[in-house]
Length: 95
Image 1 (cartoon, rainbow, N blue to C red):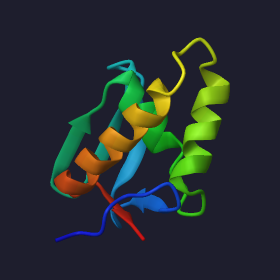
Image 2: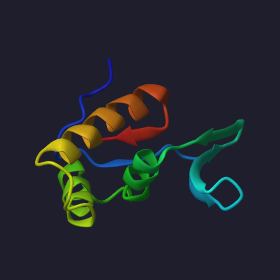
Image 3: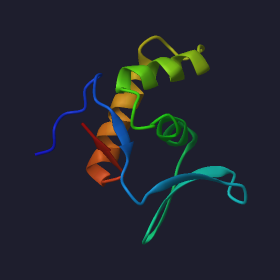
């Protein structure tokens, strides 16, 4: 069983995977050796902040500053839920 993602967890894209803006599709995509995953705006914003150095709380803080109109606590829950799903999908790694 994988370790839980916590506020102090540092997440990064899986080696060999890359986040990229696709102009033709007007969206972020996650590229990997066997293909591509099309992302919604929220997923692109979250994955764009994963640099392998910031912990989850820092990522949440950056996104809360970027989207101050979001309801209190909503971004934190969305980020956590997405990161858990991304880890289960094998898109990211965390420590």
